[in-house]
Structure formats: structure tokens, C-alpha cells
Amino acid sequence: MATRREPDRPGADLRDQDLHGRDLRRADLDGADAHGANLEGADLEHAQLGHADLTSSDLGRADLHGAHLRGAELAGADLVGADLHDADATAADLLLADLRDADLRGADLRGADLDGADLRGAHYDDDTRWPLGVEPDDGGAVRD
Image 1 (cartoon, helix red, strand yellow):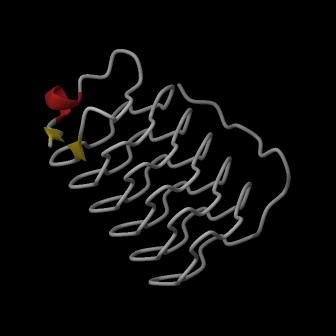
Image 2 (tube, one colour):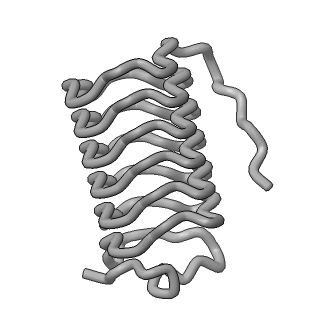
């Protein structure tokens, strides 16, 4: 069972906000509370989201290329079709997250909680780093 990790510092309060399609490239949202936020299609390329609470958020088709998600809470998040190419999601909580068709090429998922996560159609490559014991092909992920 995953335990909630406290942010290193308080962040922005974005709970339940509609940020659909917003340009948030390189935004510093470390420790933000974005629980339940609508970030569908948002551009979060290289954004700082370490220890952010994105529980149950909609990040479908969001651009998280190179984003810093270390220790982020993404339990139950919708990440369908999201671009997580080269993202650092080390020790992130992805419990029951929907990662169908996500781009996980080069992503660092070491120590992440992927219990119950839906990986069907997610794309990965030789540079993707998985948590110990996770067999991405068994979950329906596709090696590119």
C-alpha cells in the first residue's frame, strides 16, 4: 500500500481547476496540490512537478516530455495518450493510473508504484527504466 509523501515545500493550490490545454512548459509546480485538476492536453514539457499531488487528475494527452515527477502522487490519474518521454517519475505513486497508449520511452519509473496501473498500448524502449519486478509486456505495454 502506497503512503502519501509530503512535499518538500508547499506549492500552488490547483485542486479541481480546469487547466485544459494550458501552456505550462517549464512551470515550477513542485509540491502543488492539483488533486482532481483537469490538465487534459496541457503542455507540461519539462515542468517541475516533484511531490505534486495529481491524484485523480486528468492528464490525458498531456505533454509531460522531460517533466520532473519524482515522488508525485498520480494514483488514479488519467494519463491516456500522455507523452512521458524522458520524464523522471522516480518513486511516483501511479497506483491504478491509466497509462494506456502513453509514451514511456526513456522514462525513469524506478521505485514507482504501478500496482493496478493500466499499461495496455503504452510505448517503451530500451531506455525506459522500470521498477523492480514489473514486466511491462505482461501488462500490455509495447516495446518500440
